[in-house]
Length: 250
Image 1 (cartoon, helix red, strand yellow):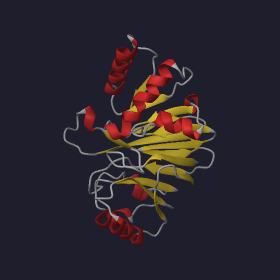
Image 2: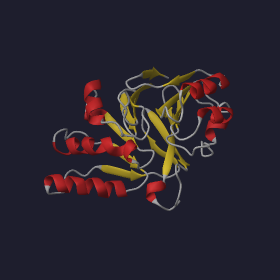
Image 3: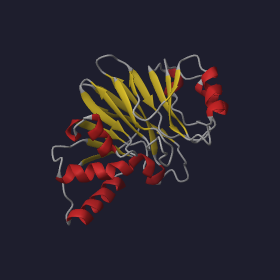
Image 4: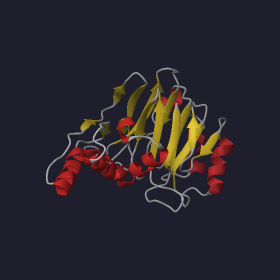
């Protein structure tokens, strides 16, 4: 499995970091997790045709995780007409909003994209990957509000059996880290560094069963270098702080 970070920033872009998005490849197929970065631009720069994106998985409906999807859908509607990914969203309100946007732009609803509302458990499988969704509690205020639903995704590559956990945004104490992270071995866990202090979270993250950990969604005011290094020292496995454009082979 190949993973490329299109954006690694926190809630707003920084000079050297775009908002959150991850492109990954397995079995010759491409997928996206989150679309906060300008994914239309980034896919073009990476030489990945829009039509090659099989599915897009959204951890939650905050702008820094979905704003890039607007441009992608717009271009897929009238220019890259062979683009037809499955779009997995915490709520179908996203479908309503994007269709309203296309109506505003073109005078009609445009192309019918394929949206699926996420529920806990296996949500996707093809010949290359299997994806399981775990509910999280990122900024929970109202559990019944679509704006507050959030998910982590466990991705298994069929050919190799390798497993990667994308946690998405979590509670500051990471009490909603999927239990799977502590009980099932992963080849890589990709988690965030915007909402909680990594030095205080070190004992919890050290319990995760993984061969390596990658930190993204980075807010340096919350987690300056010394806090990052405290976590690194607490882990038995290698840890990397992801940069925009960085690629990993899992």
